[in-house]
Image 1 (cartoon, rainbow, N blue to C red):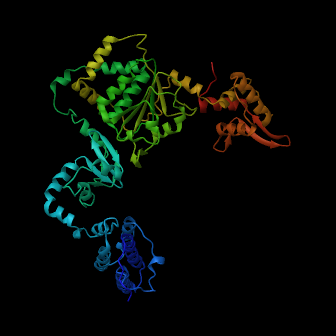
Image 2 (cartoon, rainbow, N blue to C red; image 1 turned 180 degrees about the horizontal axis):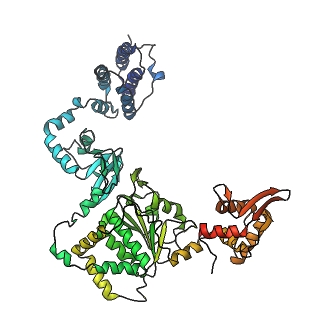
Image 3 (spheres, rainbow, N blue to C red; image 1 turned 180 degrees about the vertical axis):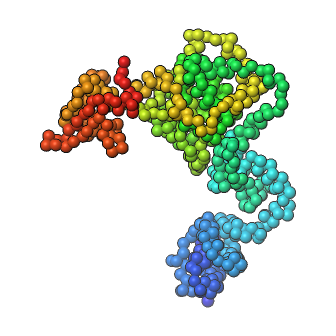
Length: 552
């Protein structure tokens, strides 16, 4: 027997965790001698902790290192489902009874013990006995606007859903307390009956989501409860023609564009859960009614359902939480967004969107967003030769032709709830099928054709010029590349030369479709790589496939 010595606080701290680690290591080893080993390790741990004996079979200093209580809790969870609960609980308590003999506030051992055995916690018993009623009252109020989903915490602020990390959530509500010693959130987080969802999603009607999914469509209802379904005889006498007149101005009084806009917004009202896979781009002089359209949309479908943003990064960038529960995203007076071309195409057609906020994990939601772009500048979007996603509409120039009386009448109608209600009902009764093809029915406006021509790749324009003489051509690839570079310099003085390899890849990208050359026929001979060009076939292909007929 070794003489008993006084342990320092540091030694006590170290020994407590070495004892815990030792027992947990044995728990994890699943074999027939586990129970025997637990009895042995408990006895050895007791003797070693009290410094009353040393056992060479248990070299604690070499075998086990100090670990944090969080790691212990993780290990505890790993084996807790694989052991007999009563047997496990009994032996774990035996261990803690030893460890707590040398516990201090810094070790965290007592806190871990109460986490595993809350019924032993005198504070929890105090809450149970004295604060049950207060906790339930606070919980009922708190859960009206707060819930947890996976590892993210949410707060409902009117029509917005704010996300928090665990630490951010704890910090914001640290003043919610049951008593001076007991935090409301400490109890709420351990409450098995707290408000929890399996997922967060945006599910507009007529779709119906699962009850364990928080549907952000409910936020729209909260913000706009007046669906104005009630009977109103005065509504029948209201004249909504000012809205239709406004749509006519938006479409530059072009009937085809006007009908398309009307169908687009009627479809939005009737079938919010079906994306049209088309984006509207309104361009024109300042004061052309673009802001007014956004205002009308917010009145029709709810303020929170429409996102108006001038910075595309907030819509298409990494942190795009503003897209949550939005039916329409309006990019307003934005600058050149050609660099976002692929992300814009994805937004127009995607079914699932990744949404993220700073400091919080991203989540995936079902996406029903429609994109509308407004700009005074025209050439800000990339319209590819095979585009099927954009409708470009030039708006009326109200600076050149002011209509003050019309706008006075329009804004008066916008602020009239009964007028908006009637217009909403008229759009909802508009005859349009839910599977109406907005892509195949697009109006091909003059401005759309101009922008498409401007954005047509140079290699397509050059190939069109090759076809002017309608004579077939046989030429080496290096010579053809040289002709292309000369053509570019004639049209753009600052043009840089393209090398043969890059030129060949460009030709293949636009004229080798489904493993078949269109107008070009690339061959290898003794002279090297050559191209046989059938100019008539090439011209027809460019006209039909790329809708390009040369620049005027």
